[in-house]
Image (cartoon, rainbow, N blue to C red; front, side, top):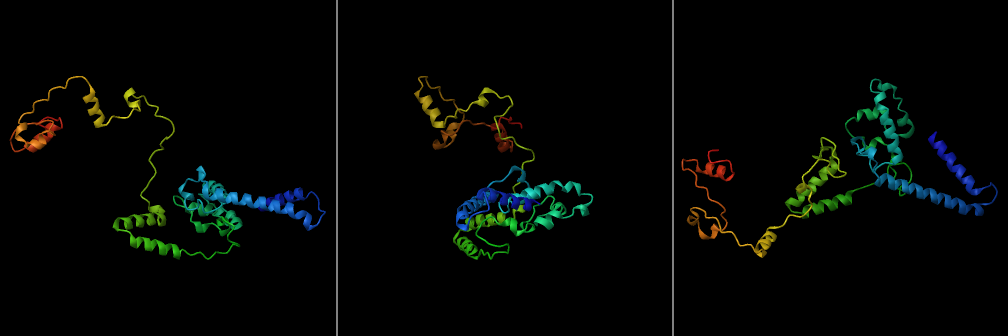
Length: 273
């Protein structure tokens, strides 16, 4: 019924362009050519939409292998059929397989088998996978990737060990998308707007932290006298070139656990910890 309505719509549009049934081929050639050109432009636009625009409703694992590979019209039909799945869970034989027999698309009983996975591209008829005017007919075109694979292998041989590992991991991500280590967050993350929780003023500041050298320049340019350096015990027992880097010395008890005592003391946990 949908195809019949589409044909009738095109027939009505042609009659409106021609205005009457009189005239020869020369007189109606330009109107018909303009109409066909307009239809071709609209079909090309639908191809671009199908390959580049991803709707929010299709961001599910079920449509993962179909995005950019089939027409948007076919995705819409599969989405409507997916909504019927819950009605056939208890009685799968009542599906009728109408969508499969008429349009060559997965019906409700097929979609139910892909629960938790993705619909394979082979489950969609070739008609809905034609996203270009380059191929004619509905038969399988002879497509080969031998040249591309040869280039990839040649590039693989030229890389070092790290480059080979990276290229191999990228190819595995493409060949086995379900084995990807990436997973969605456990809860939905709101990425819009600023945080709504109360924060201190120092937490809301966007001023850049000064670098070490800016602190040094600021202290050097100030007119305040420098504070005398704190005396550190037994500092002279260390070699001279390292004394300038020592901030503190903790002399712990020598009972066989001095190493642990010194670490605990420098972490402000107390020597007895």
